[in-house]
Length: 592
Image (cartoon, rainbow, N blue to C red; front, side):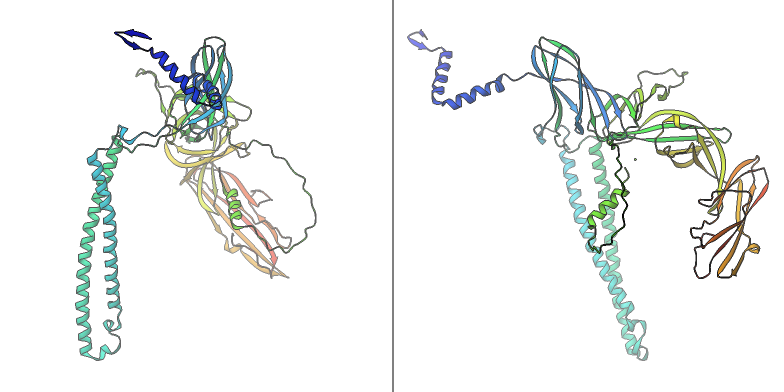
């Protein structure tokens, strides 16, 4: 307290302390204890620091992806909470793994979701101009009203057409009944027909003209509305997007002294994956096929992968990893019970769905220009194959940018030269066409997975096929299309056809001839397949009379000829067999 010109002034500090002391007197003891307990939370909580972090690498699985991010930190002595943002909303928190360097101890790590306050529409920077807004609104209103005007017109046209049909179908107008015997009735009918049909046709003409004008206006308005919407999109005049939640990873560190280091963490996200795509380029003059192995990478995780190193893995982290176990299979006689209860319809539908459920251009960042004379490098030269215990991983040491838009981005995996044998193949019983087939061997070392393939032969597009390396075979066959240089014809030899009754059995003999003509300038290897019926009943007998030295599969009855046909050579193959069966029991011979 001080005195100036006879006026006393109180020190502000003492004034505040006096007021605080009087307020404490008004509080009960329970309130004071509560305030004391809240002091550490309100004023002495651990300091927080937001750490800038970037994506270092992404391992893309067939379903899902593993994101690897890192950031550098500097903390003081004590306990500090580090906050890492930029995390995808499709994160699986259970898969978070964290490693850190520096003289500190990791106390805790967790995933949190922060819901920010929505931004007011008035703060939107890219607001659509008011003039365009009004025009869009007017167009939408006009189109709405025009739709019902057109419906009303169409209804009137339908009514008039119905009246017209009634008049035309009337018996009097058609000349049926007594009208043929009375000139007066005929004159009256013709007058009514003339008057009514002219009136209806005149109204229909006016309505059609009005409808045509309305449709023209509607088309013009739709075009204008589309142009305005495109203008808005091109100028980023889009409605404000809703405020999305912010996903964070919080890491609590304790240090005995000020320290710094690097934090690296990984986690799994859904909404990403890749599918294989193959290009097969063949030439009849070369005994190899060039395979281009590509990957269509997509992601819709909410975070762009900007200039990121990609690894492609054939693993699927969402696939079942549990080893199956067999239970004992007990046999016993079945006791029939008349149980009328059936499986509910909804459960049957779910069961059917379970059986039918089938689990199908990134931008390469160039760091420097290449001289015109230099040959451009291929992405394959930066790829390393890493074979793991249950999968294969292709490490591509190039930065790719994959936007979070769900679009397919093409990534080159590798190329290979495949040893190939070309053979012609035909099944004249089904189709007399001859197909060129490439038989590819030694695919095990390529670690391919099932996928679509595009086929090119001698520089021309042939079509699409499906590569399935999971088939247990040493050779994969690819059909390259039909050829017109080899003609095959299969016809029935009627003179050798026989049918007779022997005792209680019918005996039928079938005979066919396959003719092959090679119009190529060189010898070709041709595989011809046909079949004989296979009996599943001891009362039905099948006797082979002639198969022209074909290879016979006795299980399925398939016949295979492997022939070398010289240029301009005509080769014939005969097929003859006899079927015996009970004459009072018909059998299925339709496939002959």
